[in-house]
Every structure is written in structure tokens, then in C-alpha cells.
Image (tube, rainbow, N blue to C red; front, top):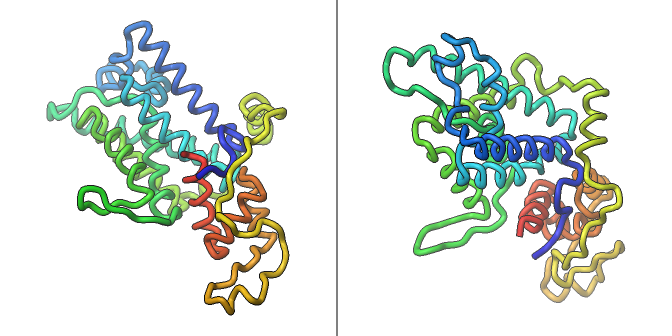
Length: 292
């Protein structure tokens, strides 16, 4: 099943974060300094090397962490399409800042316990903060069983997150938990953070240099709804008399909302018809379709 808009279309901030994370990880790995970028009490408090906070917030220390981390960042680009690049920029800055401050605080608290000396590096704060809206806003659309265990279409995202969370055990567990805390604080609208916006000059910079190529066009996709009609119009009356529930034409406002998130108009219409005009379910259908 194919659908939706692939790549980073309508997600320039996500593209910038993915590029920054990937390039910094590769640079430090090539210099064989990947294991030195995680922050520690000695670095931040004693030696006052505050510059390490920036690479530590973006660069991963190992290839498996990089693979799972970039996959999750790319998957969660749907939230940028939902709330817009400007507000998503605020979400990124808030969650990365809050989680980084909490990480530094934990190093101060644990410095005399020998519990941990260095934290894992990477955008754990942003990734695990994104699991909060993923859990609350993205509905389950299908369930299945593997070897007697129940799974849903969201299970593989949770498994990827669990793998990343436990990749370095205590060193990665702490940043991941603080990411969840930061995401919860954003969700609770602490200090009115959800109403804040990035200055227009900065948002224009991301839109200009990190937006998808204007000449690129989405690839053709198969129908999301099988033989459901894609054109607008009334459903034939004999369809309901045959024992099938009629397919109600989605309202244009719902289609426009999905299109503004970066999805194709025809795919959005078909997804809404399949989801019986539930826009949350339709969003998940389109997201799952484009990830396959």
C-alpha cells in the first residue's frame, strides 16, 4: 500500500535536524571521537566546556543508534506537517533545551554516587518527546498476532524507540526519560510554550534552504481504498440496499487539512473515506502507507 507524500516535503525543520544529526555523527565517527561527545560532570561543571552541549544534543555515538534515531526522526515528521514548521521549531527547541538542562542537573545530583559518569549523546530529547503526541494523537488502525503475541501498526515504532532507549543502558535511559518529561511539559503548555512562534526571518531560512526541491513531484500511488470511487459525488442509492454501508464523501475542509500536512489530495480523500471521515485515523493511514 502506497500513499501520501514521501521525503521531507512540508517538513524542512525535520530535514535540518536529520542532516545535522547525521553529518555530526559521521564527522565525529570519522575522527574517532564519537565516544567523547557525551556530556559528563567533569566536562560541563568542572572544566566548563559548554560547547559540548550542542554536539551532544545531535550526534549519535554508534551506528545502530544513528540508524534507529534517524528512522524515528524521519517518521515523526508527520507532527511538523500537523502543526506547521514554525510551531514544530518551537517544539524542537523547547524539548532539546529542557532535556539537556535536566541531563546536566542529573549529572550534578549523581556525581557522588558513581551511578553514571557520561550520558549518551544524540537528539534523545526530541525523539522521545515526540512519543508523547505519538501515543496520544496517532490512533491504532490495525492489530495482528505474531507467535501468539498481539501487535498493532504502532508497535514497530515503540520497538524502535525501546531499542534506542536501552542502546547504552543507563547512559541512554536517562536522556530518553528526560525527553518524555520534556514532551509532557510541552503537551501541558507550560509557560504557554505552545502559543510561541519562531521569528519570521528564522522560519524563512529553514523554508528556503531545507525545503524539498520545488521541482520534485510525488510519485504515483495506488488507491488507498481499493475500488472506492475517488471522484466527488453522491453514492449510488443501490449500494446501501445491497447490504453495504454507504461511503460518505469527505468534507473539503478535512481534505484541505490533510493536504496542508503534505499529503496528496486524492490520497487524502480516499483515506478519509476509508476512515469514515475520522481525520486522525486518516492521518495514520496515510503515514503508514508512505512508510512502506
